[in-house]
Picture 1: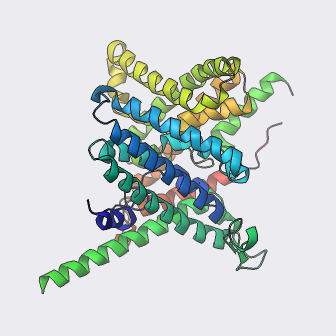
Picture 2: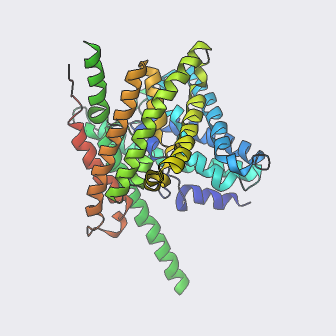
Length: 213
Length: 195
């Protein structure tokens, strides 16, 4: 098992959001402030680790014909647990994420990792995979949040840093509020993915040149 | 406000001002994945509309049962199971009875189970406490809004794919930016109130 390689895959080469383009609904909808983004990222990471572990532990018991249905039930169970926990302990987060907490059930990242990784690997490897992919997802959300919140609301980390008020970078009245609306979500994700493609291509190019010498 | 006006309000808002994809962000995966050609986009849209209307009706009944048993916290689990079985039944039914339609929609059907829009509409119906007719209209019109958005997007994308742009913007980034511009157009509907 290679923790470093898996972490690198989750963060860079196989980032679930920026390279594989999975789970886009939540990425676009919840990245209006750092508080929402981090909350969503951590919830998904927790569910991903739990469902990966359970599915991997049951991988020899579940018949392959009904495996997708079984995975969905397992994932839905964990999502319900997280939903109820958030409602009880962090009601503000639960309110601002709204429908997107129950909708984690149909987040392609979780079902995708269950099918592609957890159903074929050991429990420990699956847990690590869940953690790494979850970190990759959270990092992508945080990048989106920082850009959108800064341009759209002019603040940094409202609800999370500086006693919940966040740091005001752009004076009130100047930020472009479109950035925290749907338009801004699409535009920001487009530019972030374009930057990522450029970055990955450059890295491959450099590697090839170094190998050529 | 009469009952008919309420229904009309739900209809308009589901298609335009609260469009499932461009305003609420439900169902972005098929929106990006199956929008390379207008024909396939239309097929996907029709299949989603059909399943959304059926799922709204079925989940309404299931929700009544859950409320009766005081098991509302099981909504997510119950709804996703209902949707998965509806998709399975529809697939088998079409395969047997209407093979032509099955050929056209077949490959899209399994994808619909994991479409946020279908689970989303069931949860919205339950949350807003819509009655049976309102639920079905919300489901069907939400599906029509989905079809409208995905067909518009596919027709834009067919042209955008041929555009000469920087290498790193090829494919998804440019498609996302195009989607952003469509969403900007749909923002124009945001203040729309009928009554």
